[in-house]
Image (cartoon, rainbow, N blue to C red; front, side, top):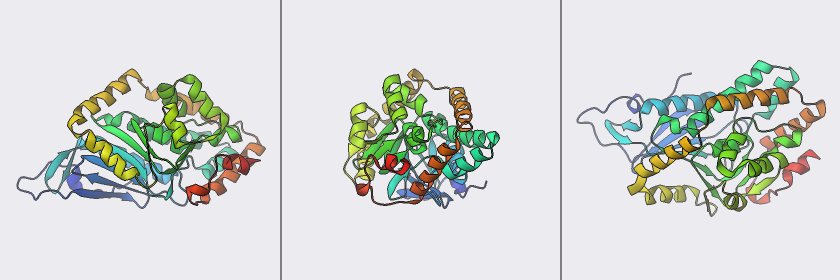
Length: 316
């Protein structure tokens, strides 16, 4: 896949070049773009999945390209001949009211119906490839942040958990609905949550199918900061600015956290194998329930009208 990214991003600075603009956008596809904020040394990745706000295979390919680009940056961004440090990487969404609804359920039902083990494995591995690289900060001395401004479900919740810090607007909702159609989130949920809040809380979040509010997640220690609706981007900016003098220490803290809560890539792959085996054991009724959730991924509306029990109502 070709990346529509300016070449100067990956090459050394040119002597005598003009100063870089305060921010520069890098276009990967219609579904994915990144904005580098030169003043705050931060890269803002924003996705806009189509036709549904989930992790479709094309978006996963785009995210893989982004991860390669981050690794090749070496921790510094070259724009218009001037290289500046990269200290923060932010995950965010362009879809109003939705961070991400998770796995491509329409694809899942087709692959499971065809008993396509290789297809399911390929999808799962593509997911953990991206999330693992975010979890380790792309191998760079940076702090990763997830900005959640709406629904954050299933694989979307896993993506948020792969960051060092989660900032959520108060109207946001979090949950793992997979258990409602007899499956479980297999792309990192257990690994990320167990390291963050412990085994008991991790299994409670995964096994109930409940949808939780941002304040609930803050109290549990899953979310690090809750802000008012519409204030997410500015508060992430304030978070970064308030730590401008300690950004090296923050990067060191993130590295220490990853070392103490070490996560091996092989662990994630092993869980994907378990997830595939479980998926291929689903009944026809389970697949019908999964298919009904595809309509939910098609149906977007303001977060204020969604209730915590809406997911269960769709399934009963």
